[in-house]
Length: 253
Length: 222
Image (cartoon, rainbow over all chains, first blue to last red; front, side, top):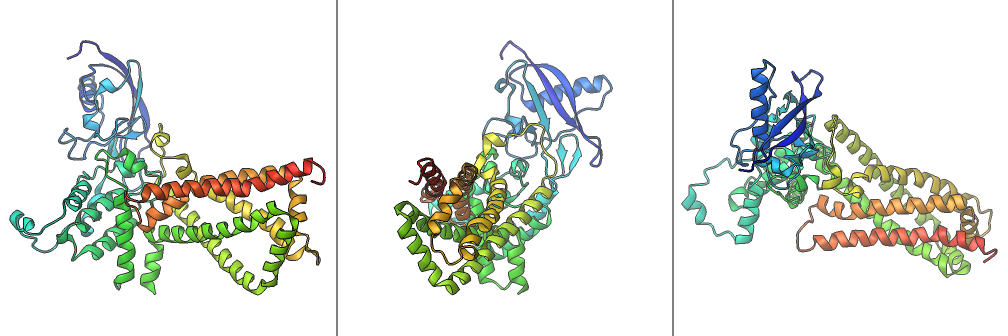
């Protein structure tokens, strides 16, 4: 444990209801460099509750970087300025004493703000339900091991499957495009034998729901890859584009 | 038919059209650049070359119509994409980290593209219109260029636009490959370098012409 404390100014987005007008509220905190950003909010909320004020609403679940719940835009970067980690893994030692930190919710039309830093990511659920599954019995683990899969292919599929669906790609994209997310979800099945029977139907249905949900389209700035806490590659978007093109040229729909 | 229109109006379909029309327009610019480089060899060869193209006017007209369709579709699609993307992302961040996570070339595509579109109209109304309808039987095509760029404002205007064209190309070429789905770590770095090379060649190749003729005009008749 380090001895010193950091004096930080937090500017946090406050928004009472989805339709209310939001604003930044300023808080001064003195905090240990070993605290995570979510712990800073916990401590701040304890103090606010003691004073009878409304605590800052934010989401978190696992607090170990694997559930994708805790997305906050910190100083312009989803999950903060350190690459390849989730908000919950961001510790205050990465900031300087006296620094001002902006905390904002993920902003996209398809992700409406519920309250303060909490957003509604159900658009992602709709995309998942449109095709990110295998609708036949693919057997149990030993059955899967019966099918030889080259190491390189298995690694690519697992890299795509690392996506935790946090929405940082949408949050950072200037077009609020969900293509990194959908590309990853399409790829993890497209790469493996069990995903083949429904491969082209899946990509069409997931893209259709993505378009309906009000996400923008990709202009290949690759900001999503740079900000993704799991480092999902934009080659997954290329695979989705390729599969979509092939599906449109080889199927009736 | 409806399934094709569904495809082409989907987000990925629109991107596919951007990529396809964009690559074809790059092909046109390559041919355009080769023709332009005759300017450096001298008036005789350049005038001869333009006259040769003039001799196959009906064919050129067909190509021009195809080019017009490509340009219009490329621009129309870009603007609808831009508008839809704007609607998808209406609220901006107080602090924006885009400088650290993406290139200026990629973020400026709609800006450089719009400026190039405006330039295209200016370019058509000056040089293309003169070549096609304003020559009055003369075949001194070279002189038209020389006169235009003896004006420093025209020379500067063309030169600046060619830099922006380079910005556009630097992102465009690799972006088209990504959209088409041709992205593999084996060859994508080469695609990116090729795109940058095209950007540099276009900027230097096209951009040197106004500079050359402006400098020539400073030295009297050349």
